[in-house]
Image (cartoon, rainbow, N blue to C red; front, side, top):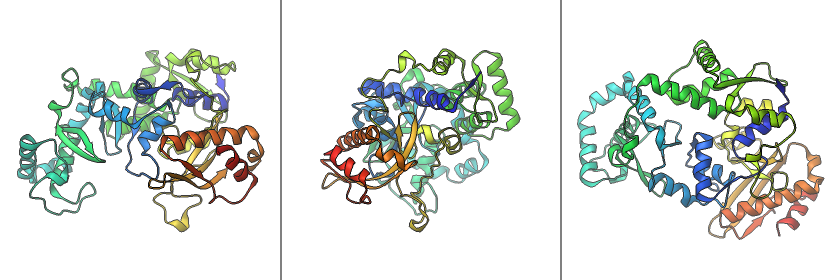
Length: 415
């Protein structure tokens, strides 16, 4: 069947817990959210909260950063891994270990390890004697030129983490403390799956992570998960196999040239949406996204595929944090505004932690006419109040916005 772009958007939003509103709650909901998203990206930037916490805040009622810390570092339900650093369920570790082995066999990495065997053994010796440790805890460091670390011990720690001998034990601030895998991973998950088994697992995971995507969009996820290049022909073979097994369904989205794929277990959900309904399991706990807008992190799962975001949401998003100031169209840290099932604009927040003031440095709407919509003003002000509360801010300051009726209306609404 063919569905509208609106229903395609609603399916993507609903699978990720964003529409018609937040449906997960507290610590249990935080764990559910990570599983449903398949992966959550970690980033160091703290203009407001970090990306992984913002992703969960957007989806989980009463989210607290302590929940994820506990799930990661105390209960060991998840672990972090990858060149693009992601949080994954701990139950997936056996499949990731097959990928870790492959990464260790890459020629350049294997050659580095052969040249630096003594350094690697020294690092492991210190970890056995004094671990868990961060790079600054290591003795005998020498400066090196590396993207991963400016010190030889840091490169060695990262290498051992890459190949799976080490895992993230905990964090000191945001600094990773390393420990040996066998002392961190729960024993039921500490084994290595065969490579073929792992790739079949990741083929299915890529379907779920993509949600609703073309062959090329699935291919990008599969390449990320397996750490190897996937050709268009190979992608076609994988998708054909999953279709023949009845695990994958295809659908046409109005305005998109290629067919889109999604898990066949969601056929009933897709039919409900096509009929104009809302799946019972998606009913929000509190306000809907029409009653309370939502703010999405720059690396949110929904918008990671910028081309799909443009195609389905008619929303062009570029994270400008690394652009020179003079080249920025908006701001260095803009967050898309989800209103209903549409990305209605973006705003640029900044948190002054000392004074506990949340500054809104810029606000841009896709359609300026929405500024006169009382429902939108109410929904955005409700979102700003929740956002400020999450960050412990006592005040929302809109004075940096251009003096417009929208600023005045928002100022009255947020109090």
